[in-house]
Amino acid sequence: MQDDKQPVQTNFIRKIIESDLDNNPNFPEIITRFPPEPNGYLHIGHAKSICLNFGLAKEFGGLCNLRFDDTNPEKENTEYVESIKQDVKWLGYDWEDRLYFASDYFQKLYDFAVELIKHDKAYVDGLSGEEIHEYRGTLTEPGKNSPWRNREIQENLDLFERMRNGEFDEGSYVLRAKIDMRSPNINMRDPVLYRIRKAAHHRTGDKWKIYPMYDYAHCLSDALEYITHSVCTLEFEDHRALYDWIIDNLQTPSRPYQYEFARLNLDYTVLSKRKLISLVNEGFVNGWDDPRMPTISGFRRRGFTSSSIRKFCEVIGVTKNDTRIDPVVIETVLRDELGETTQRRMAVLDPLKVVIENYPDTTEQLEAMNHPQKPEMGTRKIPFSKTVYIEKDDFMEDAPKKFFRLSPGREVRLKYAYLITCTDVIKNDQGEIIELRCNYDPDSRGGNSPDGRKVKGTIHWVAEDGAVEAEVRLFDRMFTSAMPDKEEDWRADFNDDSKQINNTSLLEPSLKTADKAERFQFERLGYFCADSVDHSSESPVFNRIVTLRDTWAKVSKAR
Ligand code: ATP
Ligand code: MG
Image (cartoon, rainbow, N blue to C red; front, side, top):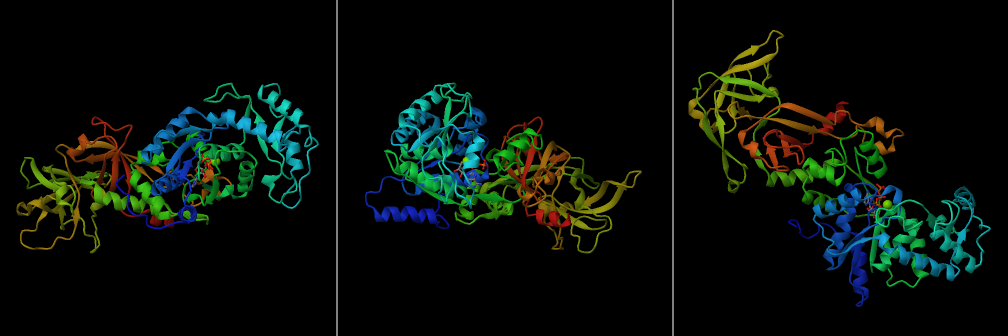
């Protein structure tokens, strides 16, 4: 990885690990894990967890496992497994040979459950789901015991085995921990550990008819993998007591501890898998990797670098307070990086034809710098001819004094080319400007003023000769409100203008050989990348990754 500098700030989890190591010379090797459920694609929130878990392991010379928490067969599949592996790798992290699945532990988890039953710490309950809910009580009222709570151990063992063998219907029985129905923590009121599910699992097929609950499977998977610090998001804080109870009541190979941090929330988007699935399935976007999506694959296709995402995760920090982050933060990190690393190119998105009347009928090759501050990035040739195209909004017929671009009688610099003066404006029958006539100063080659006269404006252009036609996709915020999640009908705030397809663009010839996913700065327009799926040299397709400056603030105020 290129950006392995010292962390910009410390965080409370790092401090916990430091103090564990300081206080115990025999503290085992630090092992963390990233535990996604394969029920959707990873999003930028997951990146925060990935960077934290893999980052801590690396920093303390330890290991981080990738573990699929695959205990819900109905919602999970191998497409998600593969996409998650690809995304973690792309982010720059390596689980080496430590790719695990909770489903690999199903037999061990079952054996642990039998242990709990034998120690009278778990029982098979015959209450229905609704009754269990009713018996659980509320935050202010204690729950009450199930009539099946005091079943004989032998009978529990027998029923649990028959649950496993598929003898009972879904919902007829569950295995519950025997803890305390009066506990102030509802998670401790005899939580369900296993339920019957007759669904095929993407890895274990029809072998299992019962599946462990997340709270039960997770802590034991941690213990089986010798995880030292099990880092998760704050919604699991109230589950920690159950985590500890399960570990403390079983003979596990190791004793992991759980720590919680605040999840990432990003403005103008949604980060719940359920909602992201709806956006895909209901056709709001073109798949999980639609460049508007806050998924890792969406960011990748849009043209974000993995280093900018890692840097973003470092910048936002890790705390216990729920915060919302403006996407400007990640865009700024990206801009700073791309400003340094990308080569400059010329492209015109909304072309206006300019005929330079005193220019001969030839094409010459002019030299342009690939990066204005970095001569070491070299130069390239761009053709210049009698007809060039400029951006429509770089011309104004009745321009105010402060308009430093082109207007009748005024002079402007075509970057790396010549100074030109507009002599005539040609309109169609509807009165729309369709062409400009200009003269150029032959002594201003390279865009230099030959006699020291001041020419304030510099604009970009593409010569007709060799111009490459392209489709350019312009993306904007996916939602018009900062917190669509908070709205009752979150879909209503979907930004219908979030994707615009531009088919008028002209690019300088060198862009014809751009590789898929290659990034550039288009002078004065922003950062763009050749689409990793649809781009080819025959029909180029570029995505705008981000504009040169934050334009959203202006747009959203005007709404
Ligand atoms: P969702 O709530 O979107 O369905 P999830 O939390 O159920 O996501 P998991 O696959 O269980 O998704 O998440 C894997 C890990 O990523 C968990 O440890 C979870 O805490 C963490 N994680 C998920 N969302 C975020 C987020 N927004 N910010 C930080 N970490 C997150
Ligand atoms: Mg989860």
